[in-house]
Length: 216
Image 1 (cartoon, one colour):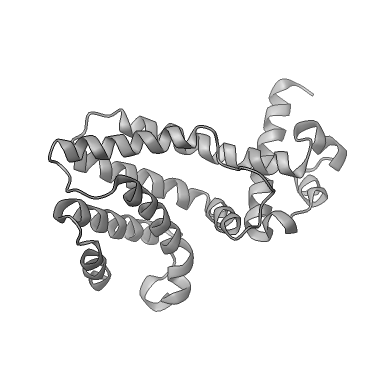
Image 2 (cartoon, one colour; image 1 turned 180 degrees about the vertical axis):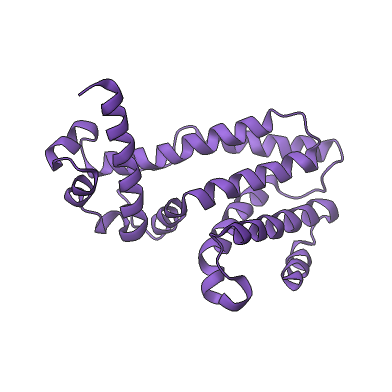
């Protein structure tokens, strides 16, 4: 097998594993089923990933790598703070929408359905620090209102996950399909509007959320 073939097989394994881990969770995922869908023997799968835990961590790392590259590119643009923040949110939502199973994996992980030990990518703190620094610098320059940058970033991540998973189940008539093109645009509009109101008017996020939801 050539290097190119090995690379494609590895990428296909990660793709299939992401689907299984999202739908069945870590405990419910079976390596032989992944191998069957990829079209290889289970023993061949171990050539690429020595264990299910290694495969799980590789799926997470793959997702982080894409996110890091996208967010870093936006942070390096010369856009003014509010425009850059809008781009950050929209690009992040695009990644989530393109990989629905990743959100499910993280939700399952938060409920304990994951291998033991630390799971965060070593670079995740570095990326988080970079986004927080951008927000803090904009606050010091007077572009954003005073609000805890870490709470804001984690709030956005949680809000996006909620809109794509729980919101359609809680209010299907109001929300519709979040994964379709119109749904993705709607999520972007809601999240950007809420965050913009929070950063423009200080600690009025609750009121901002109600206003956005009222818009429909």
